[in-house]
Image (cartoon, rainbow over all chains, first blue to last red; front, side):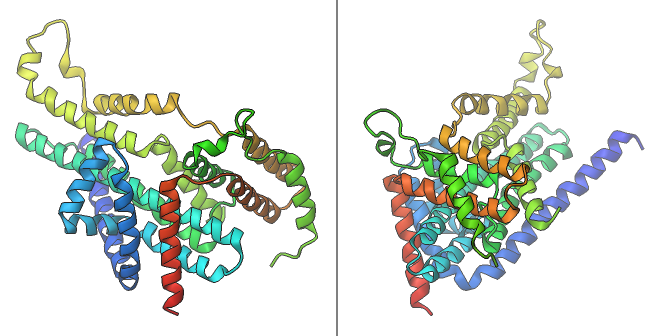
Length: 230
Length: 145
């Protein structure tokens, strides 16, 4: 057996395993999130409404298809169940934080970001699934052989969307989200890109979000040294 | 590497895989597949053109081209972090490397940084509506207790 045939066999096994793992993960998520489905529906409605304001062609197509077909809508919800389940967790945290306005505000913004991620994730998954359908149809139509590496690559991309949301869910649940450079940049980029643009002008040009970063952070660092951390 | 570092590493890797533009990359891949189908469909005609050797072009080349086309504009117009935020992040990282602050203090400083950014910007209307929805879910879950 040539090396290429062996590699093709490996790719075949891996793409089957990746797609099966994805299906199992989705079914498991459904089983786990069945109790909170009513609360999640509210979040779903809000993000579908949010889609109305976007004029991108792909988003418009997804929105029309989903609005006309509740099964597809539920399927998208399941594929992005991590994002929705964790929004519910955040909502509970906001309710528990009571008068701690800063904590509540930050949890809210992470929740808003997750809903946006779910919205984008749906579009992305729809594109990738269309990719698989188009590829399999063209192979069938032209009577040629399926390239297992292409299927593996597409399955891997689909899985990556799912895994990213799962990892975010895990990190938010553990309270780890945002405590490093990568996630800080992700969160700040989201906040500034989705902020009111008029607010970024203080009359004399662009406003600095943090006027004196080093002085502010050095003061906080000194203050935090005096505190006991559990 | 503990679970916390491992999960961040995995998220960074996924981010690199999608070239920080997941939708563009996915659309690029789909475009490559569609182009491959079209080339396959018109191959009897394309083979008659002697100046190009169409059989050399494989699906991977077309997917690469698609990903490149859909990512070039977002890359050129990519978001540039406001300088004061860059200064704040590099300050935290330098202090951590120099050993002036512990890991937990760096985490606390990152959290304070988010709060400072949030205090200084106003969200646009669409995001404010989503915030209200999340807060209404929060009130609903509090009501259920």
